[in-house]
Image (cartoon, rainbow, N blue to C red; front, side, top):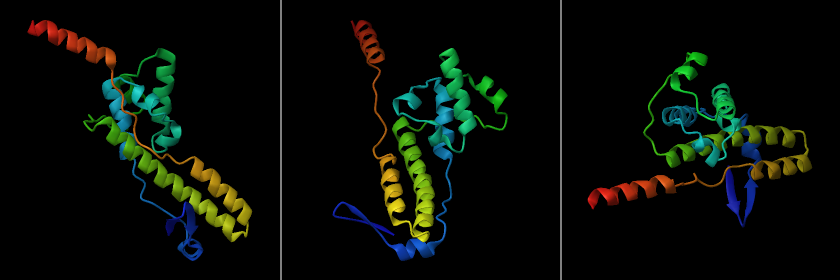
Length: 171
């Protein structure tokens, strides 16, 4: 059980120590959707603008690494056929969710998995009576959490060009 008191985290040691390992039903849906959306739109900016890494795609790490390597080598996202050739079990799916929703879900899933792992490791340090190590580990763990939301971006050039074309059409 966690509660925030005056800016500090108060940890109920009895609950943590008697709870056993923290386990969660890991949800890979956001990872799956983002990979599909990047392939669908052939746009790698969803990954770069939100500073996503292989850590965020722990359920699809090989797929993420393939897209990243292809993009870094050829400066384009692989097309769906190329991708499926390398990952025949991967199901291609159109994704209509807005980017900010997908990123928020990905951050939430990442944080849940990250916290569960860190709490289990923290529990081991406390059981070993390593309070100083547990405090340092806890501090370092907090610094790596994703607190925030998706970056909203606007393609100024596309919007400007579209506005110019619309103005010409109405003249």
